[in-house]
Length: 299
Image (cartoon, rainbow, N blue to C red):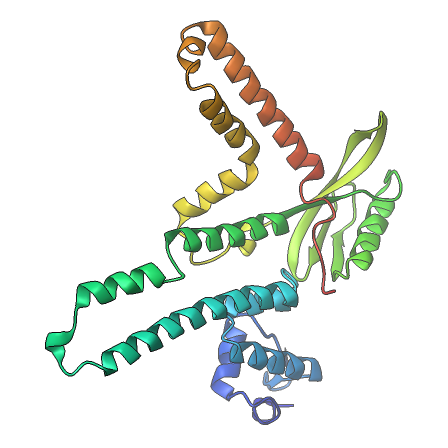
């Protein structure tokens, strides 16, 4: 079908359809004879889904992530529900303020300082909640960038590696396509390029294969609308929370003894050794177990 028919059956204007194409949400085929767009039934269903999600005021970046399988529809709907609930609380507060202003007879009765104080104190969105919301988005992106799983077998050949990836994708309802078959294979999940490597870890003293998958272009999954400085801080908190927690615990419990600890090189050496040990264990956990079996599909 052409763009006029797609407009008719989807209820979306031709201009918006072209806009969604430019944003990468839709990629219709082209007629080789005249280079006109040709929309399939799948394209039509995608347009209808976009229309439904836009009716919920879901951001385009979230819709694109759903269409390409970066996040599930359930995750996107849950995040949008939280945004709508926050907006609802803001609207209720605005309605309450309007009701109060209606009762006033003139500007001389308005107390702006009191009204601003009430609005600030009742506002559901503040620095902490906004920061926490951005942290959740950053943490979700980090979990999408890297995940690990334990295959059924030893994975000693490229063919066994591909079979393990396909088996994992089938179990988690992921659209996985192997683009390079090797012991360091490359593949796509929902159009996002990944690479993988086999590691070994010990379980009850026995070596067990572990497959670590990592996105090839991390910028494809970076959340938008977050300042680079805030994003870096949130990544450090997400990946290094154990050393940070240990250091804070040390400060809180040993406040009276830290002076003596730092007065000798042995104390400094002990502290640095503990931090290095925790850092090494954290890196090992990130390398072998980070987000184990944590990437979900469309279920």
